[in-house]
Image (cartoon, rainbow, N blue to C red; front, side):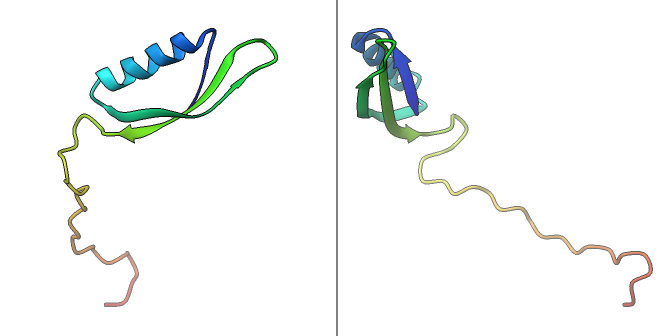
Length: 75
């Protein structure tokens, strides 16, 4: 994600708060530049773990069910 902050400390605080939610891990800056407006533009990378996901759990696959024939279809 790309974030803008008035100060580098603001971006650091944002990263800490992301990790404190428990939904983001290993948030680190990968690029940083100062914009013409004097803002810190920082690219962040990290791992997002949805709140309802269990560790090492694969997403549930829908169960396939036999479908009824379309009207007018030959059996």
